[in-house]
Amino acid sequence: MSNSSSISHFLLLALADTRQLQLLHFCLLLGISLAALLGNGLIISAVACGQHLHTPMFFFLLNLALSDLGSICTTVPKAMHNSLWNTTTISYTGCAAQLFFFLLFISAEYFLLTIMCYDRYVSICKPLHYGTLLGSRACAHMAAAAWASAFLTALLHTANTFSLPLCHGNVLGQFFCEITQILKISCSQSYLRELWLLVVVGSLSLCCFVFIVFSYVQIFRAVLRIPSEQGRHKAFSTCLPHLTVVSLFISTVIFAYLKPPSISSPSLDLALSVLYSMVPLVLNPLIYSLRNQELKAAVRRLMSG
Image (cartoon, rainbow, N blue to C red):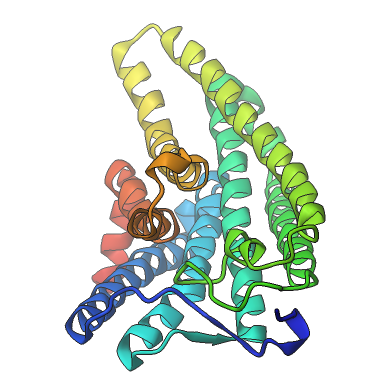
C-alpha cells in the first residue's frame, strides 16, 4: 500500500517493447508534432498578419489553433522523450502539470468549437444582426469566457484528482497522465468526489453538445430555404469545415471513453488515446484550409514572403 505523499513519480505506458519500435514511434511522434506545429503555426501567422482575416470566424479559428498547439506540446514531447531514451517515468509534479495543461487546452477547444458554432448560426440564420451580435468586444468576451471556463475546469480537476490518496501503486495505463488512469490507482472510496465533478463537467459538455446540434438543425433549415443552388452551396461550404472538426473531435472522445468494456484492451485503448489526443489536432488546419479560399490565399502569401 502507498499513498500520494510517498509517490515521487509515475510510470507511464510504454508505446513499444523493442528498441526498433520505440525509435519508430519517436519518428512518428516527431512527424505528428511537426505537422501540427506547421499547420497551426501557419494559420496563426496568416490570421494575425492578414488584415482581411480579422473577422469573428478567423479570430476564433486562431484561438482554436492555439489550443491545438498547446495540446500537442503538452503530451507529445514527453512521449517522444520516453521513446527516445527508453524510459517511462514522469515526476509527480510533471504529471500534475501535464494533466492540468491537457485539460486546459482540450476543454478550451471544446468551448471554442461551441462558440464557432454560434458564429456560423448567426452568420446564416441572422445575417443582418451579425455585426451587432459578434462585434469585436463580444468576440473578445466569448473567447475570454471559453479560456476562463477551461482554466477553471482544468484547475478543479487537477486539484481534486491529485488530492486523492493513492493506494494501488504508481503505474498508469496510458502514455500520458489522464484522470481515469489516476482514479484507477486511488483508494476505492476516495474517488467519489472526483466522479461528482466529472458528472458536473459532463453535464456542461452535454449542454454544449445539445447547443451544437440545435444550432446545426436551425442552420440546415435556413440553408434549405435559400432559393438558389449556388447560395445553398456557399452557405453550406462555410459550415462544412467546422462541422467536420466538431464531428471528428466529439466522435473520437466519445468512443475513447464510452466504448463497451467488452472490446477494451491495452492496445485498443492506446490507439484510441492517440486518435483523440493527436489526430484531430493535426487534421484541423488541413480541414479548414482545404475549404476556405481566403485562408488558403493568405497562407500562400505568407509562405511566398
